[in-house]
Length: 280
Ligand code: HEC
Ligand code: HEC
Image (cartoon, rainbow, N blue to C red; front, side, top):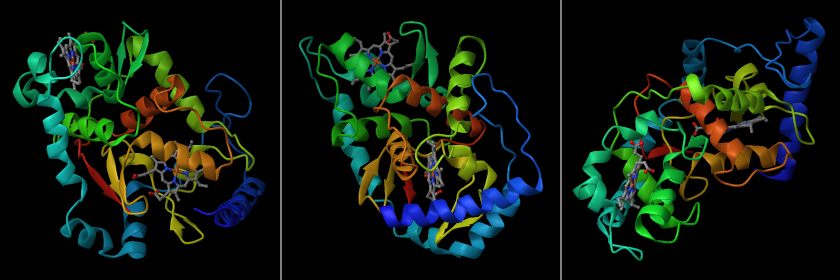
């Protein structure tokens, strides 16, 4: 999105917000820190949202899917990386996780998850790099590099069809809370929160964009995006929206992004993993 578009978007969404706010004062639920965090209500039911999506996009998404997902081709490269020896210990992922990584089947449906070794949330991408460094004596993959994305995509695709079931209880709870607070916290030059768009105005148009409901934001990453002309991660998408918000952009796999990924993925609990996704 261009700067001009973002500015228009801010005006459009901003005016929606101000008229809503004069109608009824917002219910403030303290998710704990700070008055800037407001828990917003879902704009409409998911069924209503789907109806609107159909009205805006018609069969465009089905047609796109019929043309095939370019990222599917890259899955083979991910598979090759899983079987390839790398690093000072002369091992491949397959040495420990079975040929083609078969022992990792179903695993990604539980990610992100709390890992006592890092006293925090591990994503699949982070765990792969921890195995590279700790178990193989190999360099970690640079986040968003081709190899990093395709191996993550392949490992996650081993859980395709498995219902997502990330834990947000026990030791994961404080991290889930942090991710949720971040999602509902207003920030950046336009004073938006993620939730203003994806919860409160999901299903409304922001200029020519339909703002998506977040129910399926966590189930399809890494995904091929036509606008990027390539595959990218969910966290790349976080950074894109933060840029539009003119807000600070945390680094890939930073603690707050892992917490945010846990929060958004938990919303998709019960939905099947579908990797790689395909988006406009
Ligand atoms: C020397 C054996 C070894 C190698 C090689 C190895 N791993 Fe691991 N991996 C482990 C162990 C042990 C764990 C359990 C958690 C830990 O120790 O971090 C693990 C955990 C994982 C998990 C999470 C599993 C779970 O149940 O949560 C994933 C995903 C994973 N590895 C992927 C990979 C990939 C991809 C590679 C290659 C880049 C790789 N591993 C290389 C030993 C290995
Ligand atoms: C000004 C409105 C706005 C704000 C604020 C906003 N987004 Fe978005 N977001 C969009 C639009 C528009 C899209 C593109 C259409 C779509 O896919 O929803 C999008 C797309 C996304 C996607 C991809 C969805 C998919 O299905 O692939 C994710 C994930 C996402 N946003 C997360 C966030 C997060 C996290 C924040 C806060 C850091 C945020 N967004 C803030 C408007 C917004």
